[in-house]
Length: 432
Image (cartoon, rainbow, N blue to C red):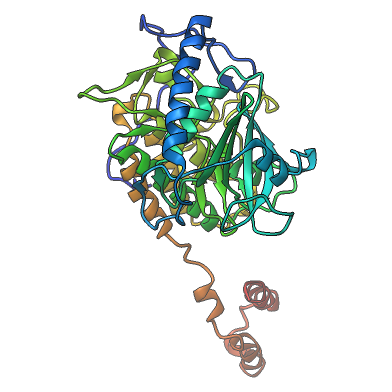
């Protein structure tokens, strides 16, 4: 069949086959199956704490400014304009962090639902004002402070329709908290994988993919490119209209400078989404994010998690299992999410599969930029299934009329059987 992009798409190399050749590679350990992390030395922690205090004091001086404006239509870098909440205010907003207000939990800590006044941001009663999401650090999290600072650093200065809006923060009594806009539909992960979740239609999935691509493209093309480093379905949040916004900037990092192709850093992120070159060497490229985007797009096509230990042996790693099915339409149809009920344009799905292959290239240089990914997604979104319209137009009466005609002119068409005629009526009725 035809290729959506003109050039032949090669399968990417296996992310599990990596070459540990770099002397700068950090050892990789993880406490949970899906989380890559490294331990800090005590001296590093002490230095970080001292630097952190200075940075936080600077934030306190800068941030006491008017309340932030509503999100802009196009993204831009803005002057940090966040509210500094007190711990007492956030306790009041979340009813003392009651368990029944928990929205979710991650490596940083728990996220609670709270309520604040729309104008003053003062805590309010449930159902009054606006809902917010309050992320509270886990005291046992070794990277809690660093991730808190990273969130304030990046989300505090960016305004874009496809980035979650950070409203304010709190640092008090060794508690680190962040206050975000509340996203009514929760995470993409829940909609794809949670039992009982209403299936997402094809056009909704594309809408989400486009929004996430716009957010990632903005980060990559900002004045100082930002590498998101943890692109995954649980970090894509959805508002009431299924508009996608990237959240959780705890692992975000400034991109390479001075003509360098990459930055070298500790390997952190989520297994199954992290690019193979990063896991192998600690070399982080801007297009390492593109690999993660390809994995999420594959999840959206198949309805299967990037890494699922509950699946049969050989099928637990989605990329490894599905990659051989992406280059043929017949094979692709077999791995498409059955909850789509085949209500999608096969040409659009095949083009999406080819885009995924390009995103998952083993060499980051061969992956498209996020701007190019966005352009291809726009083209895929324009592909619509050509069904139904011609089938609703056929005349409903010719069949009965033909029966009458047959009765009068049986000697002209005696070779046609009545069963054949009924079969034709049934098919027409099924299409109606």
